[in-house]
Length: 565
Image (cartoon, rainbow, N blue to C red; front, side):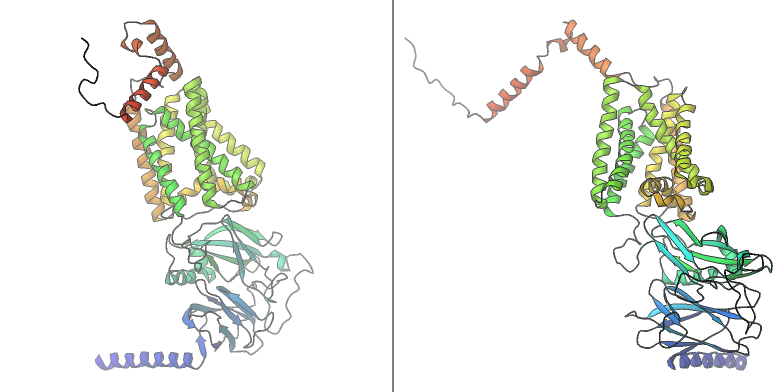
């Protein structure tokens, strides 16, 4: 047993020594379908070699990945136009010649520090479609790469159309001569999306999960197919951006006649810059956002449990949200102010809106107007939740008119349904809206997709291009915890307020009428001690007189005038 174990260790040591020797000689040797980790340094390019290629292989797809540093893969040692690709997720298609059994690529980086990479060569037969084989937009003749662009609203991926496969030594099929079933127009493109674990920004995790998105079987087993495109559709797909959340995209081109498939080079994004050093990826919220959301959540918690009892505080909360929401949309679309300034101005405008709603209730006592505002806010959240589901990705809602009319009708439906039981509507709104403010506060400290229930609606109002984005977000451990907390707070607040308000008047009386009746009572009832209270002007003069006496110099004790005889 021991000699066998020593023999195995000796073989492993020899293999390790050979790998180190190959690396030191300036080349890396790969195997088909196997991932290889390696470091790329700045001075010289490394040569990548694949040997013993099978005769039934028609073309190879070599791809290399890093977390955010750029690496270059090229057909030639000297970089030439149209023969190389540079980025964090890049690949090349190598069309094999007859009798060819070895293939070579060159890898390099311009980064100052060594770059950790993972790479894999994949083989395909003549039946398989060639990803990017009909490229007319990008630099490479055959471009299997997916090009990604993002901003704070949406993430867009683009890729070149594929072509039908062909045997070694044969001429490639023309791309746009005909549109029949014998041409590349029969091909279909399946776009897949894969979410990394929430809050995981490590390099090791990314490179490990990228291995699930490189080959066709693993992609179909691990990722979610979000859309299928035909050859008549544009090879462009937009998604809602999720800053700080790692996402991997890939496209599988499928030949329905031959039932053959091939995968493009997967691409990943965090919708933020890992190399900027501003912490935008690590912490999802800015300091101003954290302060604002924390204060807002504390007020929301109070409303969740005591909103119906403290009616004026609830009205301030509702007016703050109403005016602040629309004010932020207007100031963002019409001005180019910085985010922190816009947030401060929104807080000021929201406070004014809350005060105005409270003042309108105090003076006019319009209960229906106040309950309409409360019901619309609850309807807004319900409507946002409906469009957060897959229903929001239906093509009919890509039209802004259809979307906003449907959204408004659902929001108006809530106050209409509860028109006969306003107290129940108010308590439900207090529990649900107040507890959801906690969800928004949690999102400023730790990522949770539940915040995008309302943020997606705000994005659509701010950016017209957002209407074409597919709305998808992960639902992982953090989201289950936050959802449980949200539900627990809402149910607790609603139950507590219903039990406490049992037997009480539905709503408080009109404040202005109470004040007016109290004033008349004090004027007519002379036995009331408050009747003898001096007018406000005399009380103010008396107060100023007391203050004046406080600053005057105290007179000395004793008689200062002569005695009269």
